[in-house]
Length: 116
Length: 113
Image 1: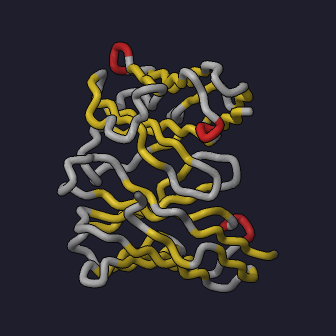
Image 2: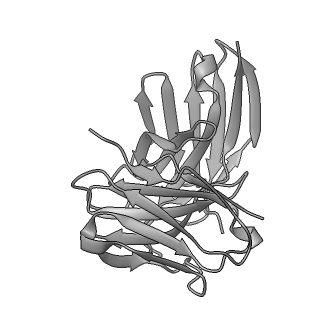
């Protein structure tokens, strides 16, 4: 079974530029998550999709971050404009149904973003 | 804010020794999960323990949960160099309306060969 795919693996941009990350979840997984992991910290949820609908985006900085999941499969996360504090690893995860706590989440390798 | 907090923040042991990591959390939970993260890689699920369970085993892993103390521990027995990684506890709760996991800040384990 193929795992969660993410691209790019690394990205370096200057502040105020835009950047987009892509995620392809495990086939058949209805729920997709984007996490932000700052160096030395645990992952923090940014947004959760159930199929192509948003379940939770309470921690997404909506003035600069946006995400979509077209057709309930792939997802993109965009930052516009980027700030220095956005430097982090952006992790995508998926699970079968997203029923709280009853499902293992499968993580992709992450995209490491550096904002200069 | 982080729900779970791991202790210690860093741990260095010799191969063959046991490693114990602790996690404390603040609110009632449905279950608690432990994940491992190797340097520069994504997280890998290790074990899930439900709120009505007290202990669970998986291979060399043993997890305990004490809901009265809002704490959990992860024991890795007979550690190997390949166990070197960061370990995170993550809690799932139905009371906040949020449905995703809340991760702690992690314990960085170094196993010396």
